[in-house]
Amino acid sequence: MLSGLRPPYPRRFSAHDCDRHTHRRSTLIALLPLLLAAATPPAAASDPGFSSDDIVVTAPGKPFRVADGKLRAAQAAFAENRPGFAPQARLLWRLRPIGAKDMSTFRLTLMGPRGATIPVPLDADHRFELPAIPAGRWTLVGSSGGVRLGADILSPGTAEADRRLGDLRLECRVIVAVVDINFLLRGMFNAAGGCASSRFQMFHPASHPIGEAFALSGPRRLPLAISPKRRAYEMPLANKTLDNDTRVKLTFAD
Image: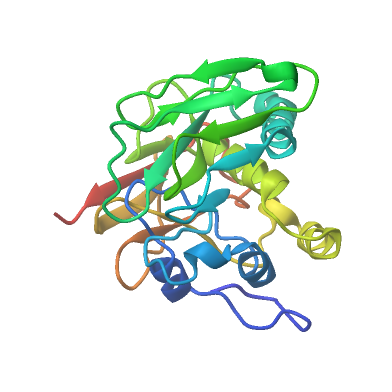
């Protein structure tokens, strides 16, 4: 549970909340209650698969469009913080379908000035890596709606059950840079310590029920809290005794 929060925060945020916002293959940065409340898109309100790390959610039947400002902000935050947290990491974007949407024919294109286009290929897991966006106004356009866009930051040799703590710290900063929220709420989050704050817990979801979660730093093994439904684990982002090369490991219950 988030500790040390006082009004005007509307309520505390707990691991129960994290369970409600967990989705398979999701990477969650559970921010402040105000960030979550302000950033939740209306299209996701009734969708049990919505996760608070979803940067863009497009309802079925609506066009998928992402303005270059959001994409540039993510790339800038990644470039600024990468040297200190995850020098070898890549910023990958991932698409997740809403419901039973067929993703086999989904296509992405960067559309720019005077009809310029740049195709954006997807891998088998519906992830992609954006190039540096050229000058001018560009928009990332999908061939249909009914999808969610999020970010994954992974260093070589890592996976869902074996993450670098530095990757998770960097991922938090990238998501904070692009989440839709007014400057006052963003200022409140930063004033509370942001991603480095020890005043509250932050959780990350898992694709399967978690059997055990722990941080491993040399001979030190630190158990991590698991949400009641065992679908999310605590991230020790603010623990200064753990360096960025600390591994955050999971075992799955199934």
